[in-house]
Image (cartoon, rainbow, N blue to C red):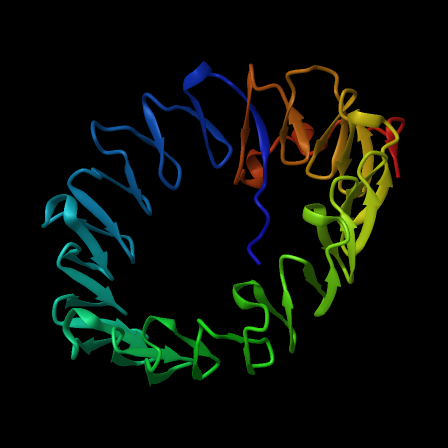
Length: 316
């Protein structure tokens, strides 16, 4: 898991042209961010590691290699090489002609079936007359109705492939659906936790765990149902709407959004209506900017601590 980005708040020194580069503020009209603040040159707006380049004429390829666009706007990278992507492609770092080859599991394979060639695992097959089922090439005995059920083929028009891998006849016609090893009519029933239940509430019936609820009045929090008008789901926990329609969640805490601001799980007093979040802190966008990837040495001590969390307006 990559380390969490470090955020810091900076003064908006250049008004609407203010930008951040690893915690350093700069004027985007004069500079750019490319592994640090660098002077901006005409048309050189691309960044390839620490190299600034012209994206209209060059590409940044893997390995931080700046390459000329030999094929104009149709140029793409394949490793550190370039190719014309309208006629060729890249397969595991190797350029190939799409009219002659196809890339199967990172290996160029010959198009033995011309334009009808497809991949089945690391081999090729004719996708018009054959089908690939779990890495096994099968014929299409039922034409367009041929579908896979694990590694076998079945007639989709007359049968259903169930979760247990068994093909069963469409008992309920086109309304047939699979629930574990059982078939049911999905217009009158629901499959909840591999069990079939009747749609007790008609079109408003939905699953909540292994039960059916009325989604007009109730909702689901994990596998537990709750009343939407008086309760809410906060971080997997059912909480009361203690502030009525003004109730919001801050992780598992309920708060009044008119009086507080939740920033990445930390509650702050809503001292002004214009404040916004910068990670777990607050800032004023009119005269401040929120920067990320700030180096420890560039983060003032006062920007590392959020404002005093709100306790009075929170209900745990």
